[in-house]
Length: 577
View (cartoon, rainbow, N blue to C red):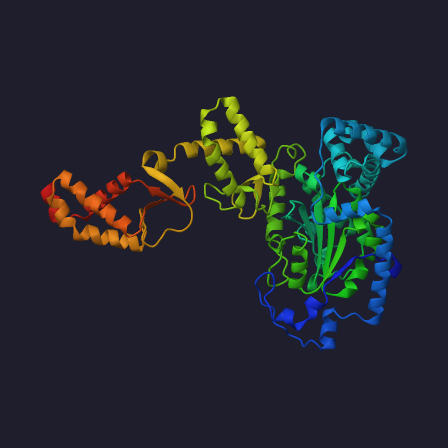
């Protein structure tokens, strides 16, 4: 069935010339993948099958959609339009949450609820469990989701309890929903991966990924709504998500387009608007222009501000990924193959398994660390003792090196201040301290504040007792690859410098063994000078810190003397014995 056109309000973000021009097909795209033209530019029927050629009827629909969009935008002031654009692109100003500011808004929220709650499901929930309804953290979540608009937060709380009762029943109205509350049909819907949490975008906003084509496996609308509720509230367990919000990516390309003819879109939208999530942007990507009709009811139900942050991207799989990347949504974060449009369920199913394994019980949900599937570039990663080259780890190593002397010379209180300052330095760029979940390659556990402090304290201890620097004559830590004439100490190390050292030792082995100790030192010194005259250095690998350690002359002499001893012939060893 075709939905009424006048209910449609979608912002088109359609690239025509760059998408259809043959010169685009001759050039590598943003992922370094060359796109070969498989259809002539003037092959109208082939392009029409792709859904990228608009008929006269489609053009008329687009004009009406543009008119509706303009009407919606005209309801906003100039300042509001600027604010929505900043939010859309992830450059909105962070909220300053001072104690008095929060208290004043909580009071305003309570006043609004007192005036509007009569006869509502909210009032029923309040009578069942006042502590649950009035919990400070619970109410602040609604204030953050509405950017501290107390009236909007109060209205949303009324809708929240109404929706919750509708999909979970009165008996669950004042309970935290866990996977224990899901029946067999609900879990079947969960395991389709039609909604997934896919990491964070460039501005550290949570990415919700939805593939409408996977809804064909969903048998009941109630199960779909339960899934949306659970996934959204799971995302809101993170305070960072409450503050920064989330972006919604609906992927309806190729076989993942929605063939339910838009069924349930209104119900999903009404539920989404009742949950305390700040939706920073909404992206609908598709390969068929007719797909916009399926979401028309949902778009019409959106308030003007959210509608102004809605974008539709039309094109092939790769073209849509490129368009998303222009909004700070990296394709590598989405559960999609970069070459094909296959949706991966691996990370999602492991995430579900981790929740079933114990992260979903009402008694422990507040104390269990948050589990994520996609670390950000500024995160500090701990991978079972292995060194990580993530930008966050590199920044932390620099901080440890810069602050080592201050830390070592300070009192316990001073050391605590240094550690807390370092944590603040990491988190202000959106970084977190993450530990890889045991037996998983894709799941990460967000460390608590105490665990993060312990990790940094351990890093200072490791830096203080670096054996290759303080005890073995190290001089400096260098970055980059060794030069060809450098001598690299360690097993299985080969270079032109190593070959020269091996040749010199074999050439002077008999001479070395025949000399007394004083003269042996001169032979070793001559070899050290020969290596350095060729431009070589003596390096020791330092995998735990990254880079290479240039060792002192004293350490180089000791290692060369050991090589001479190891090079002795068996007969020489017996005579020496």
